[in-house]
Each structure stands twice: as structure tokens, then as C-alpha cells.
Image (cartoon, rainbow, N blue to C red; front, side):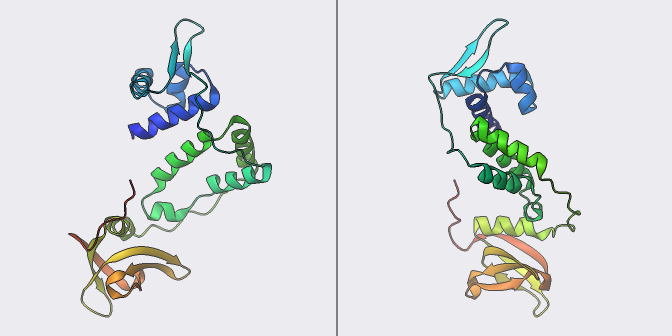
Length: 211
């Protein structure tokens, strides 16, 4: 969580220029002392953070430090606003809703000021008031972790008492979620046809290198 906050702090300073510790604390929803500790951490990491004292003081990036994304055209900014604003039920189903919120905030801060302003304007113009999604299948986050970590899974199915699978992917189709089983030649197993699942500590192969 702290690494995520440090990156967002860096992006805010990059795009908005000098800000006070109080302003940064409000933006990041933390205490001022937390901001000061974060500034110390960024400085120790070698980033050119400058702290100005006094009534006109503040915190800013020095030496024209910039790592900005390429600017977007107006229609591209509108499209990005829709992508960032529209609720995606599948994120909650996979246990990724909180991570998606953090990613959205980082992505917005990474754009230059004019692009970010266009995106915010488009988000006000195009809004989504969708019906609440059905209750997520509680098995999905566990299966997603099993896919990431290449863990063996035992499932109960309607056709047989139990089955051991090597899950390498999850797929959402119009008729529901399916788990891809490498042990059966990448066969797709309908989650609707499955009962309880048990995630093993055993791995069937090296997990994907995700950093």
C-alpha cells in the first residue's frame, strides 16, 4: 500500500507542481506526518524532492523531473474517461475492485494537466448508473489466486464426485464463468457445474512472473 501511495505522490507533484504537505495529505487521505515521511523516503531513493520552508513554502520536484505519458487527442480522452468511469462487475467478482480504484487514480495522475482536465470533463458528461451486479461467486477470487500461483485444485462436479485440475485461466462467456484446465488439454469447465473447490498447496508448474 505504501509503494502505491509513494507513486501517486510522485505523479501528483509531477503534474501539479509545488503543493503544501496539507494539500498532499488531503489529496492522499493521510496525515501530514505521513506525507513528510513519504517525502523523506522519496529523497532517500534519489528523487529530486525539494522542500521549501515558510508561509510560501511547499514540496515540489526539482531539476525538471518528468516521466509523462504521451498526450491524448480529445476523442481519445473521452474514450479513456468512459473506460475509467464505467463500473466493471468482473473486477469485484475476481477480488480486484480495490486494486482497480488505485490503478485508476495512478493512471489519471500520470497524464499531463490538459489531458487530465479533458478526462475529468468527459467523466462529468458521461455517467453510468447501472443496476447492482448479482452477488459474486465466492469461489472466483480463490480460483483467480490458484491461476496466478499455478496451484492444483480439486473440484466437485455434477458428473463425478471430484476432479483434480490444473487451472491456467478463467473465461467469462455469455453463459457464465469457465475455468481452463491444463490437465485436460485446456478444456473449459463450467463453474456453474461445479460445487465446492479445494485449493492445494501443491503447484503444477511455475507461476507466471508478474513482478
